[in-house]
Length: 398
Image 1 (cartoon, rainbow, N blue to C red):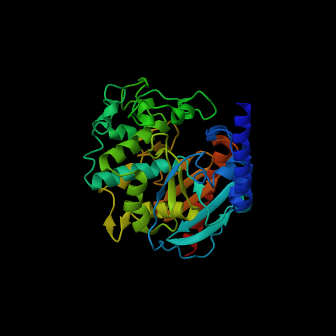
Image 2 (image 1 turned 135 degrees about the horizontal axis):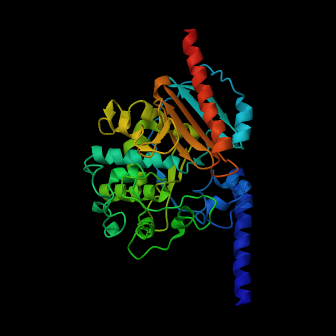
Image 3 (image 1 turned 180 degrees about the vertical axis):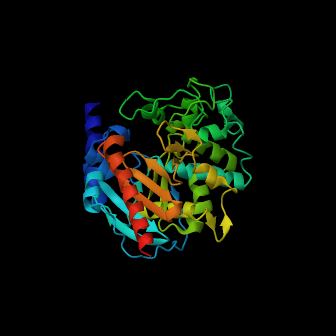
């Protein structure tokens, strides 16, 4: 038995050694810092630096579906460099930023990279993917696959019947007001967000559905807002069930290819083969910025709307009170009362959109902690305001 185990280890080590010496720089870095478990919340900073640009490259970490791009990239003509009243180099260093792209009035005003990343690389999104998923709900309604956001979730996911989600509407999932109990503590190894992706599903049931239907209720549906990544995964299952397509294929069909993303993207899969829709789209920082531009321009392709009339207005304004003055939650978008809105992911991923200033800021980072609102989180908020001030200053000079 021991000889057999040693033999297997020799084969594995030999294989990894061959892979290391034949791989590119990014893959070598990943192999040198390969995480020992699949739970990203508890990886070291060097492991995350290596893996965030390569999560879809090694099947032992996760399998993924490709999000096919089209043949022509949406143009990003360069504009005059924007003069930001904040030291961008210091900001990027303290944020541990891999990519930062600013588009204003349709022009590329700033593009910088760090951590050995570049314009052709792909970085994972984490919960930025939530805003892509909610946008696919709108597309599915426009296409007639979903009747209304007032429909019950269990009408589209029958395995939820009889659970706490049986009477929850699609809108209540979108706004995270289901009233179902959930723990999103990223530092607690026993929290729901740490456990649910590794849940062993019942035969024939999606892994997320299998986990979520065991949860209990803590408030009447619609009464309480609480952030729950698992619920966005349910939304993804719902969209796939309604359309009969994978989320990757539907995203490619509706937005990625026709709008003109420059590179193929990818979307990580859960254990039962569905995309992890609350997380984990891999894309270039430019293509994340293009998605912001798509939303800023009214989600139209060749003048034709992809989403229902008034969807963006509802999705990107406060639908739920989150307990922070001036801020709220829409349909999987974080909202500001000044009309701006953002997609945000742990460890510093973000797409900030300000329609009044025709402004998009896309950033990918690796913060020391998953979330830290008082330090790097507050600093990013200050950076957004600094860029807004720069745009306003330019307008006042005209």
